[in-house]
Length: 231
Figure 1 (cartoon, rainbow, N blue to C red):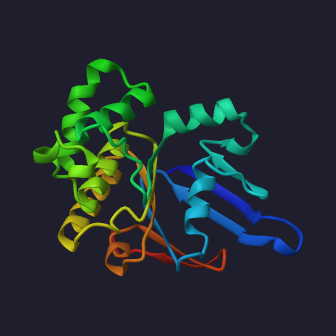
Figure 2: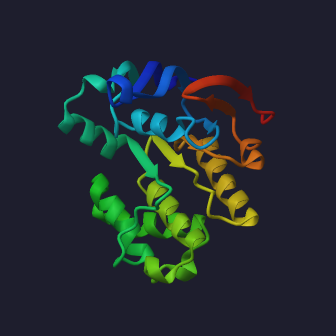
C-alpha cells in the first residue's frame, strides 16, 4: 500500500499581531491509498481547515502537503486548479449544488468540469445517483429536495468523477441514521474496490467505527490516532 497524501508540519495562522488566530499547529498526517479516514473534533478544532489545505483550497502558513510525491504548495494557481480537477472530489457541508439544475444535471456538471469524456456521462450519472439511492429524485432541483437528499446529490456528484481522493466535510451530518449507514457502506465499497481514498470529518461515533483510522483534533492539533477494528 502506498501513500496518497502526507501533511508535514502544517501550521495555519489567520490574521497577524494581537489579532492572530492559530487554526492549525504542527499537523502531521499520513494517508495510504484506498483507505477511509475520519477527522474528529469539536467545532473550531481545525478539521475543515485541514481538509481545505489538503485539497489545495487554502494555503498553510508553514508546512507542506505531498500528494502523489508532489508538494502541492509549490504548484502555481493554474496547476493547483488542474490538480483539484483531476485528482480530488469535494463534498461540502453547504452542498454547493447549482440551484437551477436537477440532480442529474448537477452530477453532469461535475463530470463536465472534471473533463470526463462525454460518452461516459450517462453511465456515470446513473451509477452514482443509484448508489446514493436518489434515482427517483433525479429530475428534481435542489429546492425540491430535503437537506439529506441535497447531501446525497453532492455525494453522487463527487463520486461520479472517480477521483483519487475524496474530501468530505460532515457528509452524513444531514442524513438520518439509516441513510447515513448506507452512504458509509458506499464509501467502504469505493475504498475496497480501490476506486478512491476518502478523508472525512464527522461528529458521529457510529460513523467513526466504519473507518480505517480516526484522527482526533483539539485546538488545531492532532492529539490522538485511533485504529479501526475493521480488517
